[in-house]
Length: 108
Length: 120
Image (spheres, rainbow over the protein chains, first blue to last red):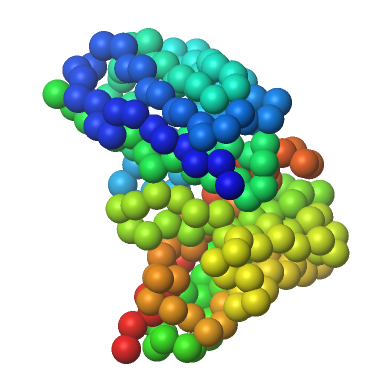
């Protein structure tokens, strides 16, 4: 199975700053089938990005995804208070679908 | 309102069983594949099982194969997960999730989860 490694584990930033989250796969992710989710405490995950770079419905354009092959990035250009959360990547190009361990974006 | 609502979790002894349910509303349930994903509180996410739109195709993680059974009732807009021979390592929040597009197992709608605790 494909192992996804997210870095950093925790990102400490201030509102208005730029956040860059990395997701690295142990082997190439087929057809850039990579998704990103946001999860806040006590809540279910929420889809942000699918197909590596396609924003889900209602996701603001300050969030963007990029990458291919084994290296993927989620960028939040200007952090808003609601962006402080845990972010997971997921690959669905190979079975079984697998998730990264998460990156926590916390207020500095 | 478009939503998924899980139920059926609880405290169960090792070796025990539970039946988890997920009631769907606000979308064409029978038109979407569905999955179960679990999460140990405070930890990462693990795919558990998926089922096709009609229910004739099912898929399982190796860690639950032979112990868990996924099914659905499209007339009732409900997804199920029968969990048997439970182990301590099955303790987690179990989410049902709607598959975004046929053949692409990303999840565009999640329920709030139901907690399964396996302990003596």
